[in-house]
Structures are given as C-alpha cells and as structure tokens.
Amino acid sequence: PRKKRLVLLGATGSIGTNTLRVLRAHPDKLELVGIAGHSNWAKLAAIATEFRVPHVGIFDDASFNTARAEISAFPAGTALHHGLDGLNALATLPDADVVLVAVVGTTGLAPALAALAAGKDLALASKEILVLAGKFVMAAAREHGAALLPVDSEHNAVFQCLAGHPGSAVRRIVLTASGGAFRDWPADQLARATPADALRHPNWSMGPKITVDSATLANKGLELMEAKWLFNLQPAQCQAVLHAQSIVHCLVEFFDGTMLAQLSPPSMTFPIQHALLHPERRAGVEPPLDLARLFSLDFRPVDESRFPLLRIAREAMEAGGVAPAVYNAANEIAVAAFLQGRIPFLAIPPVVEQSLGLISPADPVDLASVLAVDADARRIAAEQLRRYSL
Ligand code: NDP
Ligand code: MG
Image (cartoon, rainbow, N blue to C red; front, side, top):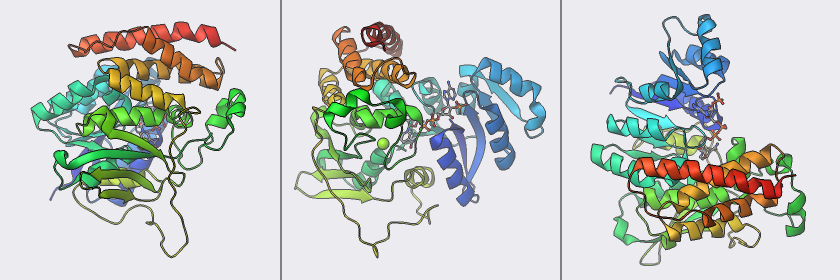
C-alpha cells in the first residue's frame, strides 16, 4: 500500500516537532508533501531539506521575502507559498491525503475547512478552531465524508475509547487535567505569578500559549468545548478531573456505569502517531508505560475557585451560540498581554468573563458572523485589559 501523504501546518512548533519524530520512525508509512509556519523560514528550510518536502508555506510577509531571497537554503524546485492563501493552497494540494493543522490560534480555520472541502482527512491539534467554528467544521467533515482525527491527547484518547460504541451509549466523558504550573500553588501566591512561572509546566513541553492555558485551566475549558463538537455531546456530558500524572488522558463513562480509560506516557508522539497511522498500530517513538516500576494514578476534583476559567468555560458552553468563540478570543488576547508582562496572571479570568458579559451569545448563522464576533471579542477584550494594566 502506498504511503499516506501529509501536509503539516505549524511544522516548526511543538506539535510540529513531535510530528517530525513520528515521521522519522515511520518513513515507509508517511510522507511529508507540504509544511508551513509563521516566520521561522530557516527551520522550515531545514525540515524541507531533511524530508524532501516540495511545498513550503510561510505566513509572514517579511519572512516570506527573506526566504525567497535565500531560496538556495531550500531543496531545488521547492514551491514557496505565502500568507493565508498559501496555507489554503497547501491544505488542498492534490497530492495530499491528510492535513495536520497545528497552528496556534484560529489562523488554521480557513485551511482546515479548505482541506475538508477538498476531501482530505483532517488531523486537528488546533482546538481553538473547533471552539470558534465547531458547527461549521463538523458540518464540512460530514458533507465531504472526510475523517476528523483528534490529535489533542485527551480527545485522541476519547476517540480511542469510543471505538465500537454507539454515541448513545455514552453518559459522559471526563478529560484529565494535569493542573498546570500552579496546581500546588496556594491561592494567595497566584497574584504574583510571572510568565516564567506559568511557562514551567510539570508534565508537558508545549508552546507558550497552551502552557499558560494549562496554568489557568482555560486549556481544559477549551477542550471541553472541543469535545462537545468532536463527539456530539451536550455541555453537561463534558467534564474534567485533576490527574497530576498525565498518564490517563480521558475516562469515558457509559450508561451501564462502566468506564474506559486511555493510558500512555505524557508525550504527544502517542496521539500524533495514533491519528496519522489510524487504524494501524505500530511500535511508537517512545517506550510505553513501564509497569515493572511503581507508579500511582490519582484523581481529584478541580478547585474552580482557584481556576475560574473552567467554571467560565462551562457557563459559556451552557450559554451556547457564539459564547465559546468569545471565550476563546478574549482568552487569547489576555494570555498574550500576560506573556508580554502587561497584565497580572489573575487578570486573565476577569478579562474573559467581562468580555463574555458584553457580547450576546446569539447562535451564529454563518461562518462570517462567527468571524465578526471573534473580531469584536478581541477588540472588547483589549479594552478590558486597560483596567488591569501593570
Ligand atoms: P507552538 O507555539 O509551539 O507552535 C506554533 C506553530 O504555529 C509554529 O509552527 C508557528 O510557526 C505556527 N504559526 C503560528 N502562526 C501561524 C500563521 N499565521 N501561519 C502559519 N503558521 C503559524 O504551538 P504548539 O505546537 O504548542 O500548538 C499548536 C496547536 O496545537 C495549538 O492550537 C495548541 O492548542 C494545539 N495543541 C498543542 C499541544 C502541544 O503539546 N503543544 C497539545 C494539544 C494541542 P513559527 O515557528 O514560524 O512561528
Ligand atoms: Mg490536551
């Protein structure tokens, strides 16, 4: 059988780097036909050279121009693509079978929809896309008969546990949360938490935005919203539990009271490989859990008084309509400001909550209205920042 041909959007990031590890382990199964990033053209050139990738996309204008001037850094004959049009072109390459979207934020939405419309399978790491426009992404996948393969570890885990079970058998799904950098911090110290503190994640090594989201638990909030769309659940069926070891990635509870869990070491190579090789199982990049050594698994409820963004996420899901999109946009603005040292850590939740209070959560009629709400929410959140500026 021929190799699966992959386009990787966000090749230079944390998910991108782990995906390349999976590709190196299975060169007989997977072939990289396109890669893209925002501005790190030199890293894209190195990846293109190592994997002999014919199509390279660079979002940023200046970096694209530099890359064009330095074209000799790329393999001979490389086609360079530019901007959002370039990402869309990559996502619809006639040569591609599957597109992995691992671009931080919602920039990957248009390419994801373009890939589905072109009948490609979509492997999705960028949860923000489903939070923003889950209704439209799921409809596009259904309409074009394309597979949607979850890469986010918890959702990949649910996908695995659900195999062979009808959706009607599921009472609820429980996503595990490591608790992030501040899991064990007393509440009164959080006021002084710095970006460097928030970026020190105990279990996972990831990009800066999602690492801060793990520290506020907004990441888990976004994941509940993501799960609702992926698995066609009601908001109340999507829950979270604190699990410090990050070994169990989800629990799926069926109506008979049985739970299935998925276990693997806390490394993204496991869900990435699962999504890309599905339904095939092969030896992974890293060793599996070692049961010859003692380890324990513990679970405890999330303390929502310390992590209000989880409560706010549940409320946004219950409100429905565009509320999750507002949550996502306002959170992105607040996290960026926190990382720039402009607002304190504890300002992130109120910026999100106040932005939600200022936008009515009407049901979006079309994608354009969702994008308009996204833009509004960013503007409104940016105004809220002023009250908290350091
Ligand atoms: P990183 O910050 O490590 O990487 C982001 C990637 O996106 C880089 O390749 C970057 O390119 C690229 N990028 C950013 N903006 C654009 C743009 N406008 N056009 C094209 N490419 C762009 O992020 P992560 O890898 O951590 O996360 C990526 C996505 O995966 C996020 O949505 C995150 O929520 C999700 N995810 C990540 C997990 C993880 O373990 N890291 C786990 C589960 C989900 P450049 O390097 O040039 O800036
Ligand atoms: Mg996750």
